[in-house]
Image 1 (cartoon, rainbow, N blue to C red):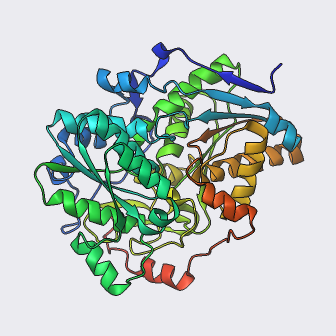
Image 2: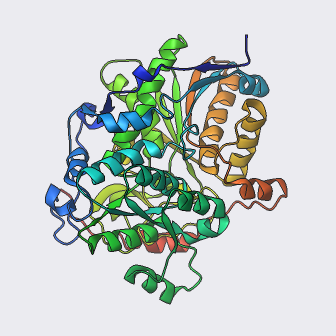
Length: 455
């Protein structure tokens, strides 16, 4: 028997619908509030930023929403993505646990992000939009949006967090190859960026700042909309193709996970793998433990507050209730740039409050150690973000070893690390540091949370 077993679905098994967990939750999520009035917003309030088709997905309570044919046609380039049984990793860990991983690095952009980028580009093109502004942390989302924009002839402008812009030049080159324009954030192109640079000319940037810049540009132009790569309901919705495929592939394997693991920054890849399994559980199916792994240097779920907050640093967005470190919080410049966000998806946050998932946090050095163990066992070099999921899965496997349990663990390998080799070079040279956030700055950021009366 091969040490690594691959489970492949036929092209006809690409999901025909996205799954919406809201339909199965025991309590509806808290409403999104207008930043000025603190009253619940309606679809028209979001119209300056998103096409109405995406807005209606954002507020939908239906269990399944049909995936348009043109989107499924593009999905066929890499979907269904493979699921592997990681026997070599199991052997290296000497664990009785069975470990599976869903590999999203097979997409043209190298991560799970095109699952929603293609959908968002399609709906914007359908609405006649010619330009989309967006942000990116490590560059995976920016690359995916650039890829999708090329398919639908939409101009893409990407505001990339400055520390990642400097650390990952080949991510920029990938975006530009697809035709996108990429700017280091904070930039001098927006009022928000100029204000940040005036306060701190050496600002490393943050996803919150980059979101503010992209939102500011989109809100000022009728032909331009904004696209977000994580956090929002419709983004998590699009990612559920991952978990839906995984359910079928686990059936092929004659197995079912006891534990589902994903890294978590804004929440999209974790929700993509975990929400369909949680939904099965909520509808009377087998129970699982869902474990979200976040960076210790930006621990929104394990250290932040569950409160209403802005999604961006410039306070241009509506207020959502989420686990947050405060919209003004700027995390240290660790390499998992896609996880450097001050808040967690409101829907993931709500699910955590309902007890449907757990959260843990790890520093980057032990995550890179886990990534190298995985690479030398399974032959795939993971992105720094994904290394957190691998660390979480290994910890679960070692728990099984200590307890003598043969549990089944499934994690989402959300992207490859081919453009992140500078980070691996730092790790192997001993220069990779475990960077801690400033406790005082975190306290200051949390003290600035909007004062919203309890509903």
